[in-house]
Amino acid sequence: MRCPFCAALDDKVIDTRVSKDGREIRRRRECDACNRRYTTYERIEESMPMVVKVDGRREPFDRNKVERGLHFAFAKRPVAQAEIKSLAEEIEREVSEMGVPEIASRDIGARVLPKLRALDQVAYVRFASIYRDFRDLDGFAKELDALKGAEGEGAAEGDRAAGEQPPSKA
Ligand SMILES: [Zn+2]
Image (cartoon, rainbow, N blue to C red):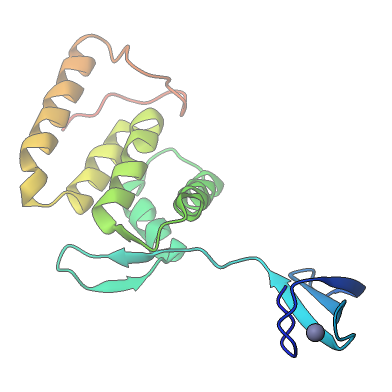
């Protein structure tokens, strides 16, 4: 650390304290050159990016919003609430770990889709219909075709993580 009084770079830590909630460390330091004391704080960076929506507006990432989207997709499907919640948490963790300042809402949707596909194909199609916009329609159509193909072959592709799934009569 650069001493705020004399700008020397060498110091020693004379006291370290962790805050009550464990989220912050406070260090009391003493400058080796002028012997004056100052304090530094260390805390975990809140690294959730801003979400850029299709219309270009930005809003803070909101896990509850992801969870609401998932609830819609899983409506009346045989998937536990806890599973939906943990899926939303998984997405939040992934987005956080990217460490980017912003992310397109479509990219979040793109992260959700393969997870849904492995879990429940009906939920997958519903969610895709929320998140894909017209620019992605070709891709969406291809996905639907791939799904139909997979169903025709007894849906052999991927893990059937959700266990028994009645074939959709869509
Ligand atoms: Zn100093």
